[in-house]
Length: 419
Ligand SMILES: NC(=O)c1ccc[n+]([C@@H]2O[C@H](COP(=O)([O-])OP(=O)(O)OC[C@H]3O[C@@H](n4cnc5c(N)ncnc54)[C@H](O)[C@@H]3O)[C@@H](O)[C@H]2O)c1
Image (cartoon, rainbow, N blue to C red; front, side, top):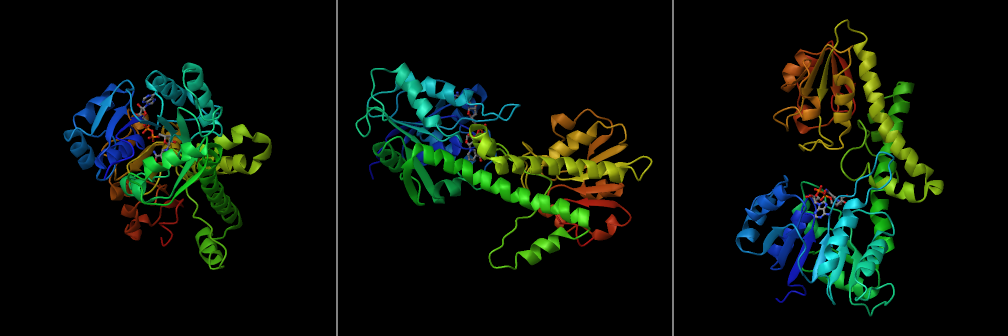
């Protein structure tokens, strides 16, 4: 079948961009991957990956070997450009859009009449319009959608990504998608591009709606987790078992309370709500408070460890889990890492015994301290007075509860409850 796009450029070859580039290439499109990192480019051009994602290695190896995907530093002419670079927040929780701006500016010289530009990076409302203004400024010879609706030279859309790391290749194909055009023609063009590989529903809308929808999805999750985390603190204060409370409350046909934990981690949920709050602070107290509740839950865990450690003269603390969610090796934006770093250097602590079955060695932030060790589960518990479960890895579920006898236990995920 002839594809509507024969050459597509993906700018930013990370957790989102590389699987997308590989999936497009596997569907027969010639894909030019662009990244600012030489290490990333070199690996991809050898048919290797630099991120851990099930089945991605084999697809990248095949499409690079077949000449369908190649990586380079600088954008080259293509029919469509898909931007998937990071959008972090600054110290003051304001969005840092420097990488999107730089990626947008980098494609300006190679744009030509008929090209489609898509932003996939999670972005504040108005980002696609600002990108259009930057491109229009750089290329006054081309007509853009806002000034020439449905009659422009360049088509522009915002199309957020919803994949879950660990299931990216499957979800890229199966998830429902939003394609937010700056005009109808742009949305329809973006839909044609994603239809090359996407099987899920594809909804056309305006770019601003798509930008806000993506942010709303993650703010919704954050607010709901904050409710569970706040409930866990209230139950602790009232000496009630929060896990039983949630299980019983969820028997109500219209109630579905999420489970509390040590905070909220990952690259999206702790960050994206700030994009809404920063843009409309006066009308988003709930979104801001949810962020504060979830950050506060992590600090509460640190205080609990400190309080329990105070019961011992030379306290030894075990932390079970470091990753940001169960059964993965990703430690970035992890509440468990925050807890570990908060107590690792404290003078009241005699030993910190860390268990993380998914890593081989401690991360750099925890290395080089005499009293911090990475240990197997049973050894860490045997050598500790305070046992803190931070991540509900499957590996912790079958723990022989008898080895917890006599220990102070802080269970943020309810996994050790039976003990
Ligand atoms: N990781 C996820 O699961 C996920 C899910 C949904 C949405 N998102 C969003 O997708 C976007 C990308 O996230 P990611 O996790 O793929 O990031 P990442 O850090 O894994 O990869 C981004 C890549 O972009 C490159 N890069 C940065 N600036 C560049 C530039 N100007 N030109 C070319 N390359 C550049 C980096 O070198 C890096 O290889 C973010 O906005 C993120 O919020 C991520």
